[in-house]
Image (cartoon, rainbow, N blue to C red; front, top):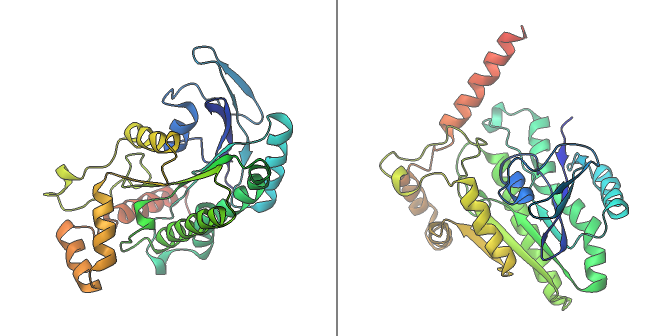
Length: 285
């Protein structure tokens, strides 16, 4: 059993914003707007932030289970109000090669990283459609635009959620619901510890270091506030995505090998495996 906090917060011009996965990493920074120590854990607890006059409500919810999402969404509506800005940010990674990854971890990755977007959107989109106002933010990954070896489940979940976001955006446009905005956020490797150990070629690393979480969130917030449809951070990711789209597969493989991106996840997977083995040994498993 795992839990994610749904942090509902008035951060965008008085609008109610709900953020999934707000207990750590980018979600925490989104939720507290760079005030890391302001958000407190809890179940329906409220905190007033005097310096910015914000109200923060936190809810524990397994976003991979649709029943939990729908029940929590109903609580949010009753206790806080209607959500105007939905930031789908919750994410997990298994850290195993495909044939070594337990089936339940693959299912968990898909449920949290992809399926949860369906449930949260279905929970809050109807009201947005009624008033033709709202904003749906999908925090995906550069690995939802191009893939790498060793993280098949993670890439599949992120590719899936990018497809979901794009299709939803087209549906809103076709329905002429121009008051509902959508923003797709696709950052490169972010230094949150989620992919600790991931390495590209050492000669390239100084030019493409892991992103600082604060910087990543600030860029995403700028995109949200200006109704930007998509943001890739850093901008080099646009070029990589374009090259991947036009080059033959073997040319893409050569590009990956030059960058050291073909096996960049292998050190990360090895660290996760070692940590798992150490934990099992410690617990006598």
